[in-house]
Length: 406
Image 1 (cartoon, helix red, strand yellow):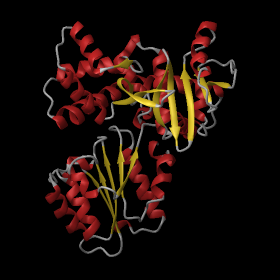
Image 2 (image 1 turned 180 degrees about the vertical axis):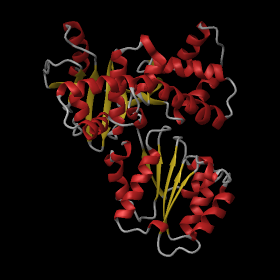
Image 3 (image 1 turned 30 degrees about the vertical axis):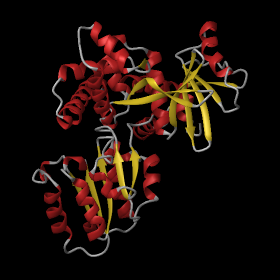
Image 4 (image 1 turned 90 degrees about the vertical axis):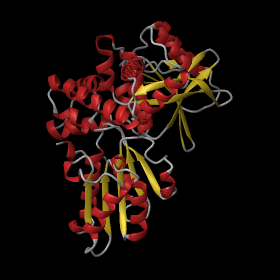
């Protein structure tokens, strides 16, 4: 059933480059739907009349391709499979980073074959290594994320028909708890956590520990848990070091920085820098980290979870999914949760579980009121009452997630 949900946000970008020379590189956290997207691309190609024999899909996680270890093995396989084909060939490689020096092969196919190439990978640095200079400027990168709330609603409409407002609230609460990894939707509630646990463990083991040959596994797991359970909090490397020292864990700032780098490369955590609003200067210390999926937050925070934190996390994910460049605003001693820019568009957003309390309402509106420009400003909460004032729009979080025009 998951395959029936078209990832239209991403397909619309890819369609523009079908049959173009640019390599289509799709990256995202493990199990966010990269394989499914490749198969939807194959459907697009077949609808355009491409002969199925000219579409070569290679899933490098499959045991079928265990003998392909490096670019030499890959070349041998690809050239053998394509030697008798006529016309344009479409090459789709799933989890290409599993092939050593894969860039050499991809660059060679561009030259030696009449082909259109699509690759996926589970690491944000897939295209930043030394060998990646071989294909520099010859690719488009598409960041793929777990299902948005709208995609989840689409799934439930396909399976259950039209939804009521109460249905949407119930689905939203499940999204906050179990997240948007596509396969999660196919499991019963009592199976979802087991599935999330397996995926989380696989990411930590394969995409962080094995990939980077990390040895201090206990520290790595402690660091990830600390950052996820404190999602949306301001951190510096030094503040993390002080916390760990208080927990009798002594590590250098260099070690912390290295581990943070590997964690973010595997997409478990996403970083947001802070910005001084008046000067628009990015601050080099005290960043925020957000979890790639609400389900992972549920795993780590458990009974200690904060609804306010997870709401902020969900809004951050939606903003980057909509291709905003997101920073955390600093205005005097106050904070704006998100400054969001896209092309010539800018919006400011505050997120709170509720602003029914007058003091809370003042705390959320006051920083926005201090911003002198006329860009749109929003306060997002779970409240059903509308407290919009002074040009600042108050919206329910669900309404924001559903309105993709913001």
